[in-house]
Every structure is written in structure tokens, then in C-alpha cells.
Figure 1 (cartoon, rainbow, N blue to C red):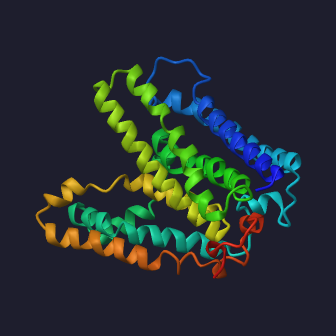
Figure 2 (spheres, rainbow, N blue to C red):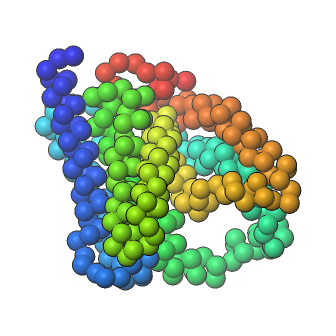
Length: 301
């Protein structure tokens, strides 16, 4: 490994660390004694993270200028903002994620008091969406958090990490910044004394593990598709669904059916993981893969 390559790696890691600290630090520039779910706190944090997200491409540009890495694709294309393969990038990754959640979706459908027609009617009701858009927590969880986190932690960090490591290694390195960034929730739990110290610590470890695994998945989607929109939609969907309620599934009146759907969803997900993210649907090679110093099987059809 050459000294220049080592230098690029150090600059890449430090740039990602600075970007992660900037994102998390922006949440705490406002002094407030209110909890994180208060509308006033959410609005202020919207301002902060949107500013950091708007500036985040400058980190990638500065990294490119400093390291001398000169990719063929444009900066926006490297960050997954492009038109080629856009329609498949909107549909296929989200479909794949929904397949993984077949069990929870079936469980939700069984427990929902609404019929199918009622659900369709609500989906196309403008008042329903107006109510959602007026809810600060819904906007945070379904729009702002998925968009800004995927932009910062995937679209900006992966182009800096891929030349240093490899696409496959970057997939598992990038989520570490994402997982650590979510440890800031511990500060608020301790601050407002929402639980015991041991309970808060276990919750933090679980959240780090879950967000790291999820981050690896969306990083995989980003590298395979070369698009930002897929990870954003998958992130929004997973925020809506939450972690699968396995405890409730084990106690469900139709336990065998629900658990079978859980298993079916996992098996189908593993079966479709590579076919539905095949780069041939999204334009070969995907822009971020052009930065790889050595060819990777993740970047080929």
C-alpha cells in the first residue's frame, strides 16, 4: 500500500468523522429544556440538519481537490443524484425492502380494523396527507431524517471511502459513523431521566447495532444502484414500520401464519437481494464504483 494511498485513507476517514460530528453537533446548537419530540425542538433541528446537508457536498468537493482523486462522473452523479436508471431506483430497492417486511406487513393487515378498500381510500385522501405534513414528528421520521441522513452518511461518505478501501469494505465501514451518530439519543435519555442507566445503555447498544446493520444495507443499495433515492425511500419505509414486533408475533392468535410470513420474507429477501439491485438496471458502471482502486463483484452485473 503506497504512502499516497495511506494519505487518502486518513483524509477520507477524518472527513467522514468531521461530517458525522457536524451533523450530530448541529442538533445541539439550540439550547432548550424541551424533549426532542417537541414541535419547537423539531423545527429548530430541521434548520440545523438542512444547513449541514446543504453544505455536505462541499466536504466531498474539498476531499476531491485535496486528495487529487479525479473521477470521470460529476460530483452530483457520485452522490447518487442522476437521471439514468432513476425509475428502477425508485421502485426496486423499496420493493426489496417491503419483501423483507412481508411478515410485519401481514401482521399489520391482520390487526388493522380497516378493510382493504378503506386503506386505499385513506391513501388517496388529501386530508390524510395534509394531516401528516402538519405533524412535525411525521415530517422528521418520514422525510427530513431519511433524506438528510442518507445524503450525509451514504451519498457523501461512500465516495470518500470507496477509493480508500473497496466497495465491499466501505459498505461495512460507512455504517459505523451512522451507528455512532445515533448515540446522541443516549444524552437526551439521560438528560430527561427516561429509564434506568442500565436500560438506557442496553437501548443504546441495540440502537447502534440496528442502525449499523441498516446502514450497511442502504450503503449496499447505494453502491449497487448508484442512486440516492433508493436508500432514502427504504429509510423512510423502515422508519414507518419500526423494528419488527417479534414478541407480538409469537403471541399472535394466528402465530403460525404470521411467523411463516416472517420466514418467507427473509428467504425471499435473500433470494432477491442481488437480482433486484443488479447494476444493469441502473446503468453500468454505477458512478461510485468508478472510484474503486480494484474491481469489485458488487459493481458488476
